[in-house]
Structure formats: structure tokens, C-alpha cells
Image (cartoon, rainbow, N blue to C red; front, side):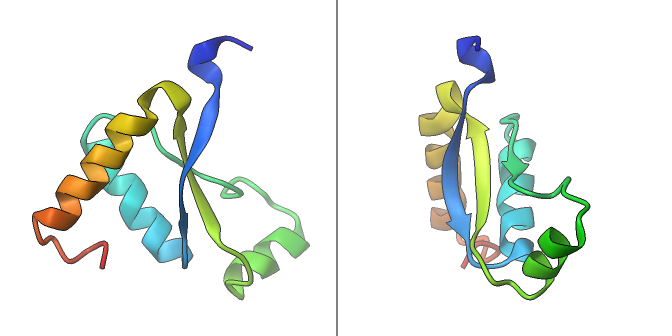
Length: 84
């Protein structure tokens, strides 16, 4: 697997909505961000997400992990309120 394709977990969001906001902030900064399981179509996976029975993993390319952390920190410090 090429190094550029390796992913890392940046955050474990409490809700799918929180994960959506985090990925939007990262993507706006030019960092590819993904929410684990968003492409799953089986009934069990959909039910688990709808009931919010597990944390929602936000993933980024491993080589951009530190940059992503800095972007989230800056967003929180800017007082956007979206990530609180």
C-alpha cells in the first residue's frame, strides 16, 4: 500500500452530525476527510448509525494527520461553536 493511501483516525465523533461538521471543516482547509462507514449499505450498519450506538470515526490521510489536528484546534480556538 503506498504511503499516500494510508489513513489514520483523527477523531471519534459522538454523533454522525458532529463527524459531518468535522469533515466539512477539514475539507474546507483542503484536507481529505472521510467518515468511517458512510458507504455501508447493509441494514445492520445503517441501524447502528441511526441509533448512534458507536462512535463515528473521522479519518484523514496519515501524512496529513498533524495538519488536520492543527486545523481542528484552530477552528475551536476561533470560536466557531460548530465543534463544541
